[in-house]
Length: 97
Image 1 (cartoon, rainbow, N blue to C red):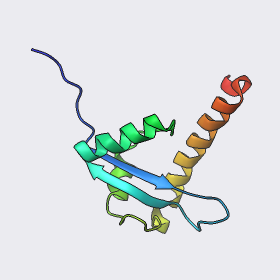
Image 2: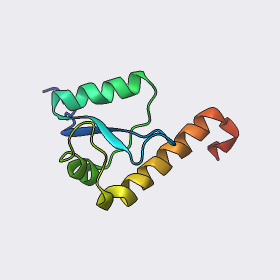
Image 3: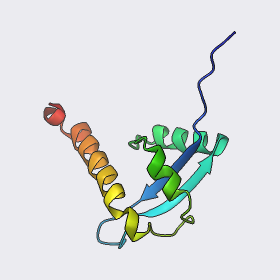
Image 4: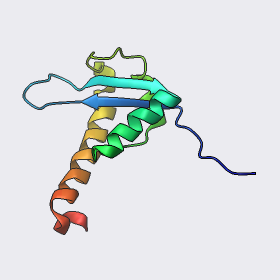
């Protein structure tokens, strides 16, 4: 019997443009095959993916194009910090230490 990879149950894509957005906003979300498509698009575009099932579940209740609620700012800020760190490592290999 072949072991198939377990499909992602949920994916939520956020966007935040400093100076333009007052808070990150949900730009895509989905479960099952839609989640897989969101992840595939992120990978194709070299977008950092962070796995955080509890945060994704909380964000799944936010409508697409809506800003994240205040109560999730701290958790999302931690993810944004992780993404910025990963992006800076990709830009400056000396920072990979």
